[in-house]
Image (cartoon, rainbow, N blue to C red; front, side, top):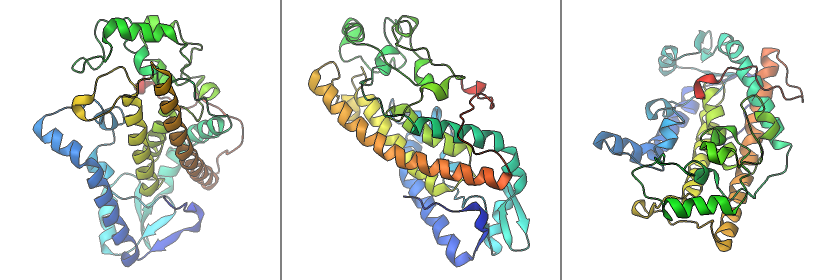
Length: 314
């Protein structure tokens, strides 16, 4: 688990301290991305893992760069390489992320802090059974993963959606519902009301911890970013095993949520993801609050979503 650095401490790391950490991070990132990079060289696509590099678009070459986080200065000649990276500046002690970057990202820091706080304040809701993926192909002639067959076929998939309530609370999943499925959902989440509905049992809320940490690089450290990415991979695998797709060709055993035993299995795995996400959410929130304090920004308790434009993601 990533340690929780304090931006205000203004630590100066000697080369003997930071270069091994940078190398260890590169190895960790390269190990995680090896399969994706091999497939990319062969021009192959993967219906499960590509999501982590397309929807979450931090590419492997950027992911492997180690960032110590705001308030940490890297000393030694090797640190000069960071001056070619966005946000870094030279100081008498070495190279560090500059205050200009901190102030430029303050609105995003506040958005993320508010969303993390609002999400953590709610009890986890574990009764959705992963039906968001089913809702994305409900009464749809062209499924999103057209190259992968539906386990139960179109008619069987439709019957499953019609047999259970849709309870999706996550806007970035709901926005991909077919119109017929959207009409069946219990709520209508939007980007502006995201903080009103986001809840800690949601797999996509857990996966999005990686997105928010990635948006705050280099202000937050790469250890936290990788922890969030590894959780996102766990949640993605559960998401797709519970989906309507037949992924047996790719080595994924289905979790048949159309059956009571499958729903029970899903909830057990969902609870485990939720517990891991709670720890990382708290870590990300603490970092945001400390960065906001450094910037002289607000870190209060009232959630305020809508101050940052994420329209390009919609």
